Structures are given as structure tokens and as C-alpha cells.
Image 1: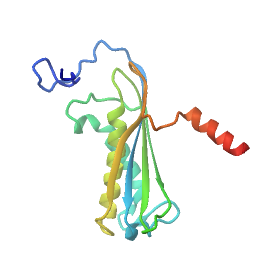
Image 2 (image 1 turned 180 degrees about the horizontal axis):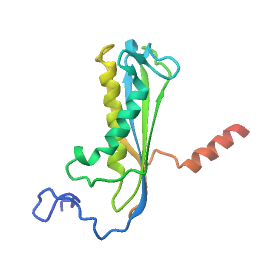
Image 3 (image 1 turned 180 degrees about the vertical axis):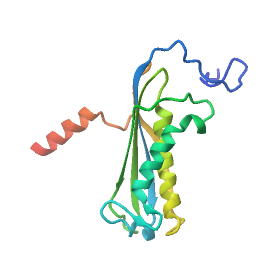
Image 4 (image 1 turned 90 degrees about the vertical axis):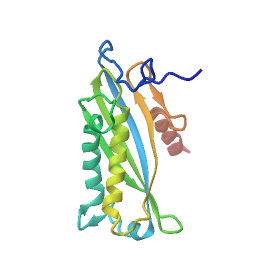
Length: 182
């Protein structure tokens, strides 16, 4: 038996999910994307930012990600338009690898009070921020790689969900305390 997808009607045609009868609840989602900057671009990182003729790359990517999250329903055909209560994007550059490349991690946390989830807004925010890093960095190198765009966690609605490899915030705090005592 084929699983029923929520965006297909009984005749297997695309259909928006009817959320009219659902209650409004607080919904939060956290998504991530990883962007690998090749050595030519990674060398330009100074003070947790890359300055370019187009402006500061990370700050511009953060703004683009928020704008993308706000426009999710215009980009993804069957998404409901949602009012964002909050959208926060954090961009963190890792340490250079042996070849000089650097992985940049983008986290997008989106929040709303609505009748349907906010996962797509968080995923879109992370994706658009990653695409912006590519666009602004391609003058230095076209070897930029965008990968691992995924949902880490969502709360609200019928059930909460967390990726199996993502520790709870309380678990991370406990581990940090234990590490400090060791």
C-alpha cells in the first residue's frame, strides 16, 4: 500500500491541506544548511565575516534568509502563508580543514502562532541564506558546495519532532555541565 501524502487528494492530484478546523498553536522549527567554502573564499574570512564589493557576506545572507522565510508560500506552491512571529538566522564558520576549505553552518529558527507548521519557512530561510553565500562568493570561487539542508527540530501541532542525531537542549546543557566538572 502506498503511503498517503498530505498534499494529494483522493484522485492523486496536488491539493492544499485544509487547516480550517485545526487550532492555532505556537509552532517553532529549526533547520540547518552547510556551505563549504573553498580555500580561495575561506581565506577571506576575518572576524567571523567576509567583506566583499557586494557587502558583508554573512550579514547579507542572514537578511536574505529572513526575507526568504517570509516569502515561503510564494515559492512553495502548496504552503499556507504564515505570519512569522520570529525568524533568527545564525551563521558560524568552522575551522579550516587540511585543504584550507571551511564549512559554514547556517541555522534558521522560525516561529509562528498558526494552524499549520513552520518547517518549510525554517528550511527556506536556511536554503536562501546558503544560496546567498554562493551568489556573493562565486566571484572568488565557483567551488562552493551547499549540502545537508535539513530540519533539525519542530514543535507544536499534533506532535513534536527532533532529528535522532540532535540532542535536546537540556541534554546539551547537562553534557556541558558534566564536562566542566570533569
